[in-house]
Amino acid sequence: MKPELTLHGRTLTLQRYPVRQNETLQAWDAADEYLINTLEASTQPLDPARPIVILNDSFGALSCWFAPHGNVTCVTDSFIAKQATLANLQDNQLPAVNVIDALADLPANPQLVLIKLPKNNRLLTWQLHQLCQALPADCTVIAAAKAKDIHTSTLKLFEKHLGETKTSLAVKKARLIFCQPNPALAKPLPQPLQWTVPEHGISLLNHANVFSGESLDIGARLLLEHIPVRTDLHDIVDLGCGNGVIGIKAAKLNPQANVLCVDESFMAVASCLHNAQANLDNPAQLRAVANNCLDDMPAHSADLVLCNPPFHQQNTITDHIAWQMFCDAKQTLRPKGQLVVIGNRHLGYGDKLKRLFGNVTVIAQNNKFVIYQSDK
Ligand SMILES: C[S@@+](CC[C@H](N)C(=O)[O-])C[C@H]1O[C@@H](n2cnc3c(N)ncnc32)[C@H](O)[C@@H]1O
Image 1 (cartoon, rainbow, N blue to C red):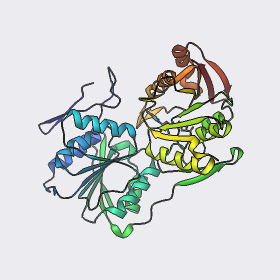
Image 2: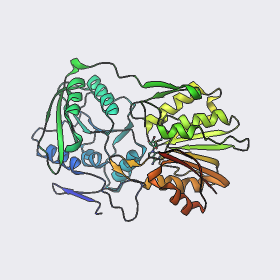
Image 3: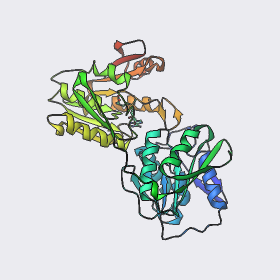
Image 4: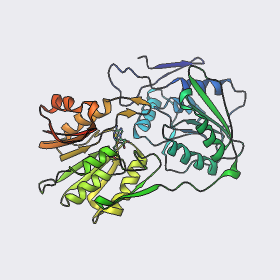
């Protein structure tokens, strides 16, 4: 895959994160190109004194393109997108961009907001509320996505929560949404969803972009029944923690252990920290951090890794993250440590774990899910 994006006589070298040998996926898409082409063709000059805000940039293509403007803020819920953006800015020797996480306040008085449509409508709705509170009426707002991901219901969300909305024709299967902010529509931000798992005595708050934020994931429900309980467990990791339900249950069952929860979503980490405060007698027992899998975790520092892995990255279905999680878990486990993984039956994680650890046992299963254990 060629990492060069060439448009309007400018070339950027753009990589996904983490950089992989023989990468087959590009770090930008046709929607990024459509946005760039539309703005390059515009006759409206940009005001250097007013910010440009970019939401949900996948791997930093838009941030890199607009960085020379000098007053760019990139808003993301993804640790991976943040790392990709910072690395691509540096590789292309571009001016700094202010990269903030999705729960942070937006800069005042932006002139232009570019949005890559998130997959999750709860996040989109939350972001439209946030934009409507912050944007002046003269701000230009353009969103972009694959045409097949822009539905009438998507346009209705823009109309309802931000302002008058139009769409473009499709180009290379991408479409744009143009929206004129109407500050009179501004409303308070939607509250994070909160619900309980009564059989485990856990209550969970879920910020807008948290995985399975509206109800307990059915895989997680099965895993909750099979978390190891042992007095010799000192360090437990919940890898891909979401709202922290697995890590919190592990901390309750093993009060002597320290639990580290890791997710690449900043909203997941914030939800998990809130949930540890609300559910644990000793909230200091649990730490939560944003990371790409277990990057830079010391080797031999965990006795147990619990993992309900993701099977897509942004809009792409992939098992490379699950594989990286298994490899990182093996690195991080102490000798005789255990990795416990839940997966949809058809994903075939058992073969991967056998290949990596040399052993795998099935510790529970139902008609949809299997829980595997591999020992280091
Ligand atoms: C299937 S969900 C499991 C969430 C939670 N543990 C549960 O059982 O409900 C997978 C989680 O992995 C996170 N994730 C995806 N890619 C990741 C990565 N590279 N590093 C860390 N976490 C990642 C996602 O944000 C998501 O919260």
